[in-house]
Image (cartoon, rainbow, N blue to C red):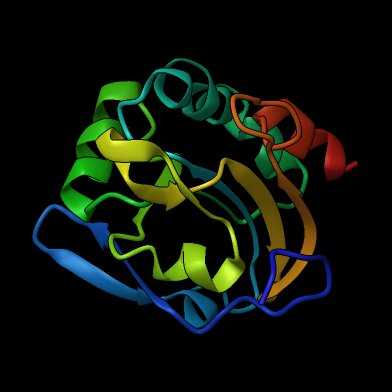
Length: 160
């Protein structure tokens, strides 16, 4: 499978950290009948992800709601505890759903894995996509070192 318009989201399990536990989420079931904006980052607490990518979605959160988006979700190849802590630090909790793809199963299913070298290892490329009822209706995969088409502003524009 590839991250492409018209493709159904894969039937994979990802995780999120609540106050009480780590919950397993079947991605396709979780999306259900909703319109969901997803953005995938190479790593929690990394420079561009922390200073620009995630904060853009936090800042424009209300604008997504006005565009009939039900959920905005950030995904990374990290564990659910790290994703929650990062969301707290950036002020995303309560707005952005922080999802952990700890084994890169979703990244592999979408065909967006990349080896980031000895420090980060295999992660997901920076990308963004919109799913409506589990079907991808918009997608963008960034070139290494870029943040253009998967930015909050660009995805918001794609909803026009």
